[in-house]
Length: 160
Length: 160
Length: 160
Image 1: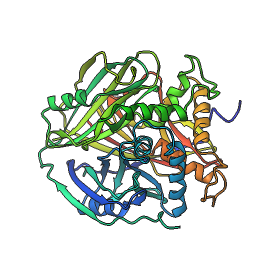
Image 2: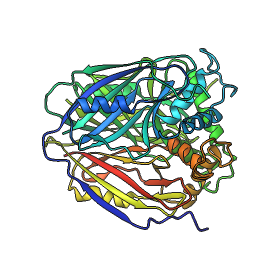
Image 3: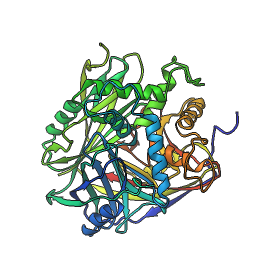
Image 4: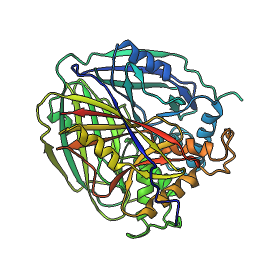
């Protein structure tokens, strides 16, 4: 059956000159107040933090310290994308899914499922002082609970 | 339609003093015997390993070397959460999904799908010698096969 | 109800001697031309890049700079596995899902959803110069659009 054993037409290899200076690390924490269910773009806050380090080349790691909020990188040009992403998550984790765990209401367990599927850690390379995001990529904190929450994210930078 | 273009109310920025000592790395491997399908909390084993390194600040990376077992960070207070998470994964990857790949039985292909959706690598910052987990976060190895398996996880620590 | 509070039978701990030489980092970029929807194995290209660095022990990070293509580690022995994985993703993100965002056709929004669920960053430890992949693990670029695309991946290596 054709169409499944895919072959790449080519692979270009580029080298990024990441220097030979000594490596350092920096850590910080960003705390966001959300207004409830939704995608919150945090690209600017993360860029500002990394710019403040005066860094050159390396790797930025994000970690969100929650089980009902997560982080993702997604299209940041059209806001209906986030609306559709939220709908897709609700399809997989509906409030009426017959969940056993519902201490904090019908949005409690769906929030945990959505967090598991979208993840709590993420890496972004930094090249020549800039987050190496693609043209359409933005960084989002996803709040999966209906009520506003205080959400804490730890940042780690390694590089020159 | 309101509710989709979300704005954060505020962003607090905290600095974590991660010192200026020379960076080092350490690697290790943890091997777990599972009893079949289920979520296995491995927070203590991973904490013990990181404590043994006498580390201060840095970044811990976990990598599971399998295609039918994965790792996630989830709520570790109520065991019904894991039961519901497992149900949600079974909804997305049911045994009767008409899968082509079934060499090792009906739980074979669902195990691969669940692994893809939950992931094989994960990072956790380390701050002042402690895993920087949130209050409700525990680290889980998820066994997606029904039979007991030997599962191998590689750990990498970078930091001071 | 038994079967949910899982206990591990044992945990073996192995130490990997990752040396005490000074840490360095290297960065590069791989650009792939895809032929449209499908799983493209890129294990060899990534192994070749890491081999060219003459590295010993450390951590390799992959980051794909797109919102409609992603990276995953999956079974690379039987090609029907990739076919089934693709079917599972199509079940979660069908073209007729009533999505609002459809600028670039019916495969536009499903591509974003599939990218969110499978992820854009990934880590693989390197041990004694070799990618520390398990027996059945291969690295895949997943193209979620029907048309051929040029896809760019940034690589970061930290280690000795």
